[in-house]
Amino acid sequence: MELGKTAYVILGMLRMGKRTGYDIKSLVDVSTRFFWAASYGQIYPELKRLEEAGLIAGEAEATGGRRRRAYSLTKKGEAALRGWLTSGGPLHIELRHEGVLRLFFSDELSKRERRALVRAVRAEHERLRDELAAIRPAASDTTAGAPLEVLEFGIAYQDFVIDWCSRLEHS
Amino acid sequence: MELGKTAYVILGMLRMGKRTGYDIKSLVDVSTRFFWAASYGQIYPELKRLEEAGLIAGEAEATGGRRRRAYSLTKKGEAALRGWLTSGGPLHIELRHEGVLRLFFSDELSKRERRALVRAVRAEHERLRDELAAIRPAASDTTAGAPLEVLEFGIAYQDFVIDWCSRLEHS
DNA sequence: GGGCTCATGTAAGTGGTTACATGATTAT
DNA sequence: ATAATCATGTAACCACTTACATGAGCCC
Image (cartoon, rainbow over all chains, first blue to last red; front, side, top):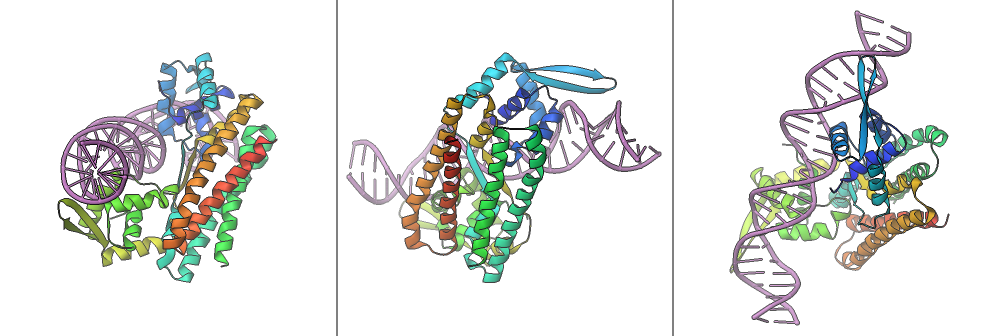
């Protein structure tokens, strides 16, 4: 009964309280998405599997007409989450960065072209940093601890890449 | 005839000279792999497709018994590579980092457990940095320009994450 | 009435990994 | 001799994305 990493994203989100698939997706989009994204196409089927496996419990909330199914963590689910968090297993770390890839092959370009490419990479990371910075105010109100620390790290990481780009541009 | 990014990895590697699929894989494993990995299962089929499309030309080199097929870039392939390098299209940037993900959900852990997790993340990035550092001597002999700059960036990036982990550990 | 948000799903496709099969050549 | 490296491939599988379909409730 090996779980995929995205299953743990769901378990982790449910630990904070009862949530629908829609809720989870919304949360992911303003938090883990920057280092672990998830789409509806993953979330809904995974919720079914996790319920079948007894790690979460769904409850239909008939609020009038609109159907919604909110899930909560079971004991078993909590244990699974904890087990994953504390297991010493290898950490899946994967980066796919087309900007750096292009830069790697950029020796055949002219200086102008190369500089344009670096600028494009920088612009992308500035966009990312702005997105993260926009989340911060709301996050520092409602959240604290680890999620906020990770958010700060995300911003610092974007700044690090932006700095590297700036140095490349002026050399 | 939209090409996947991995196709451009192949084109980029072939621009440096005639190469077999095996050669390309070996090169990827000591260079782009850290920001764009590729496996045989992708490379060999992609080589066939690129040849059919006329972007590369394969030549069977009968060196006695061992069969090998070395490819080189065609004019069309060079143009495609250049086009990709200079196109302003959106840059695919994706990170999947299980370490940061665990940290994000680490609030329920004890201080000891959390620290152990941070240490594990740091260890992983130290391993990565060592791998990159091991490549450097050979790279700075044979290579120069962009690939070397990207390698230096990779090392600096690992150091950045390692530093963040260290700060987390001692707080 | 119209547009936005809440809400749930699925089908088709993509991009990629893993594991295996095969065999020649070279180094120890 | 035998282990490592060179070399080519494929089949099965996996994780994930995209696009679509559907519909209720809420605000202007």
